[in-house]
Amino acid sequence: MAKLKRLLITGAAGALGSQARRHLAGLAEEIRLSDLVAVDGLAANEEFVAADLGDATALRDLVDGCDAVAHFGGVSTEKSFDLIERGNIRGVYNLYEAARVTGRPRIFLASSNHAIGFYRTDERLDAFAAPMADGLYGASKVYGEQLALVYWKKFGIETARVRIGSCFPRPRNRRMLSTWLSYRDLFALVERCFIVPRLGCPVIYGVSQTRSGWWDNSHVAYLGWEPQDTSEVWRAELEASEPQGAVDAPDALYQGGMFTAEPIHQE
Ligand code: NAI
Ligand code: 15L
Image (cartoon, rainbow, N blue to C red; front, side):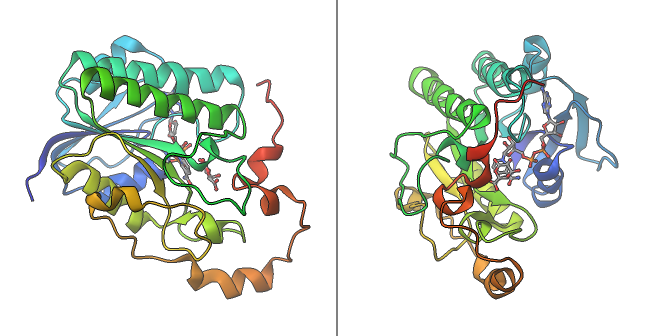
């Protein structure tokens, strides 16, 4: 497999960014890491560049010279509009502008299931389902997905717009039996997105094998990505330890679960 020359990983100090360092170490000759917060223990092929996604000049310098970007930086839960605006609205705009004026790298965009969180748990979605965000955070992810599409249509910048479900070492509750994505499956997907000859700008649901079937990825079979892990391994344990919630609880009603019940945060 031909290696990428320089891969940029944003959000490198965060939960998925730090896993990305481990899982993607061999994917590129050089790896540029960035975050607001410094990271430890740089490997020989890693460098760290501190940058605020809200700073356009810093973003241009950051993206310059990279042929791929794994974009995990930004606000990852429901927060105030000011924080979300900086990381996920202005931040994504700055990323795409930087990509446009530099080498037009291929981008893996960490979107979220909260872009479609107000769909009910008895609905089945494919990539063409209209967004239905469940809060300011989810709406910022819809914005990111749309901006990626603009830069694909106008400038040919390819992006995997990945609506990640719940990416943790294991599912944490009953809802995550339907949304869980293993680290192994996530980073296999990142790799496929960077090595396929033609990516385009697909919406992809980031989920491991699950019997719920909320999300249909059949339109991206060309990526050759086949999740290897399954949440079923934890079903019996979770069902025994967590009482069945009320039928009208957010987790039971909506794919976005408790995010649908979040207030509008002021700070
Ligand atoms: P995280 O919160 O652990 O990491 C995000 C990183 O982004 C942090 O290290 C933070 O310092 C950095 N960041 C925040 N604002 C920034 C700014 N203005 N400038 C520069 N860096 C900034 O989040 P996690 O779990 O690693 O998620 C990574 C991405 O994946 C996020 O975009 C999140 O929305 C998305 N995602 C994650 C899911 C999961 O299950 N972990 C599920 C769905 C989406
Ligand atoms: C997300 O978008 C969040 O980043 C993550 O922390 C989880 O809460 C996940 O969604 C989820 O829906 O479980």
